[in-house]
Image 1: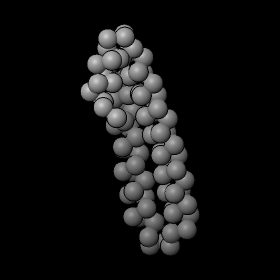
Image 2 (image 1 turned 60 degrees about the vertical axis):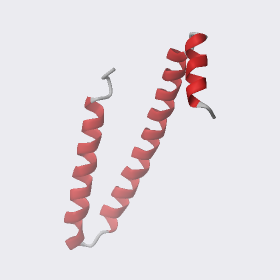
Image 3 (image 1 turned 120 degrees about the vertical axis):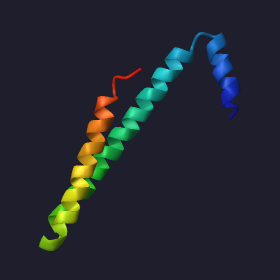
Length: 78
C-alpha cells in the first residue's frame, strides 16, 4: 500500500481527520487488549511463583503499573 498516496488522497477529500480518529481508536483497542493479556499473565505468574520468586514478579508488576501510568498521563496530549 502506498501510504503517502493514501495520505494525500485523504487530505484532498477532507477525510484525514476521520482517518486519524479511526487509527487512534484501533490502536487504543489493541493496546487495551495487550494490557489485559499482560495483566492476566502477571497475575498468573504471581500466583504460581515460589515464595522466593515473588520479589521479581512484584518488580515486574510495579514496572507495568508505571508504564500504564505514563501512558495515561499522555493519553490526552494532542
